[in-house]
Image (tube, rainbow, N blue to C red; front, top):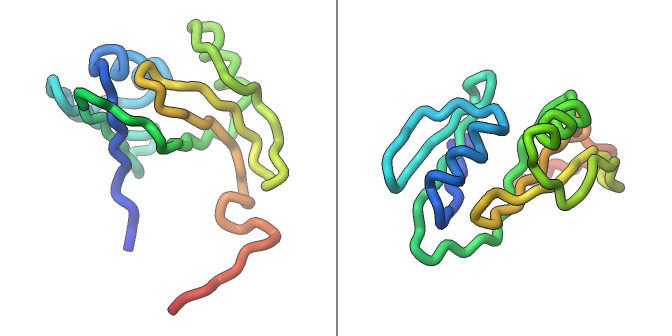
Length: 125
């Protein structure tokens, strides 16, 4: 099984599209009610769905090795961060902001710890 994509609800498609384009993603689907984006190496995608009563509870993570530089460039574009880049107890370095619809976005770098933290277990049924 492989995760295909995540779809986020948005209340303003135009503002949301502009936000994700400014983060550096490539838009690959453009309709008034649905937009889809591809990451820089074309291996993952996510989408936006226009919802009249968008409720935001999910957090989406975007990984970048040069996290601090990326955050700096985004601040220069006017993005406001809720948290600055910080190394967390779970060994990921991350910063957080929100998109125009209030979806929480975490920009992070985890390196080897993304899939192989020191406490990794492998349990299957």
